[in-house]
Length: 259
Image: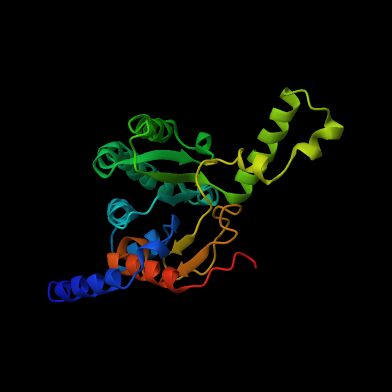
């Protein structure tokens, strides 16, 4: 690996040089897939080591995004479907996520990002909820942040849409709108205002690791015109060169937005 490092650095430099800055995505979504398969492939004796490697990789990803002046990054670290996994697999991951959130404020201050955590976090253990909320409180959106990081934690795309519908109807009812008139008050703008991260722009690029070629419900509303790049490495093995290749592929595509 030490012999290949200079080659990769040269290759990364060439990729960066050939990417036009005005064609970079504004909002990137990353699906962190493949922790358990990475552990098995590497012969690790427990998943905790793989989860730790994955969170370390996530810190690296945020640094890479900062270096390329990306405006917003949403990372999907846990889905609602993942809660169906055995407790023996979930508890170590919950603990690693707690540790990750504890280190996130320092990283956020270093890289200058504002933080949000979105999803059905009330379904998670109290300690993890407290850790996530503490991280958000440690990085207040006070106007000084130059970009945004959104951690999708216990997130499900269908659940977000259901929650947005319920919240919108509740607001209309609270405002005194009669039931028979509610439909006339519902449009794309009013619906978007009730999504978990309503202030972030739609996704431009979605990257999924581990060779899986599907979105699995990731930001269903926001990804309608997103370009997708599916890469083979498991998340803990994801490299900066893989990230830059995804940016290069995005910059080469002609986006038509349904036209």
